[in-house]
Image (cartoon, rainbow, N blue to C red):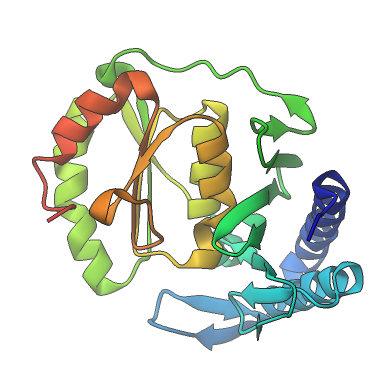
Length: 261
């Protein structure tokens, strides 16, 4: 089935902006609905409303497509195309007012992602990519400025804050911090978007889910970054990412940890 990816990108961007506006408008009055997988995995009424907004809009545009969303949406579809959405990636930041969050939307044909959108409502920034084209920021081409030495690099780190994953990330941070310029912790979608446009130089993502990373991994891959994970493939459970000129040094540092063992 042929698809007008540019037209569908416009749909996804429009919906991401609408969800972002809803999140900004309702933030002061949000209601925490409880925890999901663990005490740090929170969900609010705004997460649920945002997912419903995205689902309704995507089904209007593509009524027979599949859908997979963080807050419970799961629909097989009949076209071979599926939308993977995280309506509010970074809920803990959103609820606590301590950092950024984003709306993340990806469209996949089978197992291959064809477009990705990551929208930051507070900064008003939208990172996008479609198949065979490099990422764009706000609709404009990006000229990435990247470090050439690991000691000057900004490293991004994203991880599911479950007790088990926090234990796993501790030794990685201890190994990484002395060897890079500095470290930033971000929600997964924004970390990967920042890597794609050169705001970060290297990154690690641990213990996430498909909706957290589908759009961001596509942005990073379209930017020409090196991506790997278990058995050489980036996955939601583990993604290691770096600008090509830093890959060898970054991989050597991470080889001192048990990440890939």
